[in-house]
Image 1 (spheres, rainbow, N blue to C red):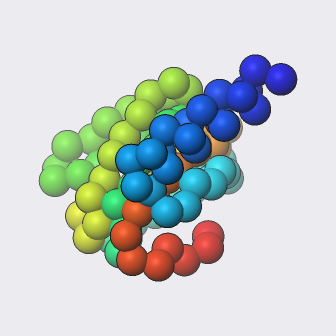
Image 2: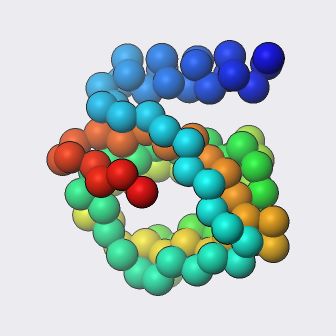
Image 3: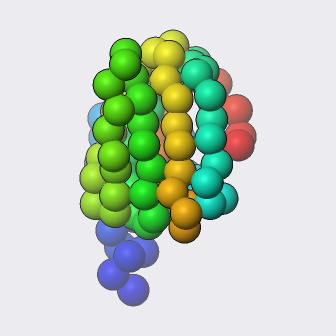
Length: 99
């Protein structure tokens, strides 16, 4: 299955870059996550649906194939499209909570 091998490659690359954890995140349609931070660096690739990521007043519309990175403690908000969204995310740094 091509998608599985792509995930494996994403995970291998992330681990080479020192990321501690790699997982799949799935978001329900029309979910809104207000301004927040994470105690870890994140590097992600959207693999389904769409989302809008707002950092420092700048909003990016992300679709399947797009990537984004966030440093730890950077305030940001997220909004997910009518089909929700799925992305692969690598986390590095302080202990990352599940979820």
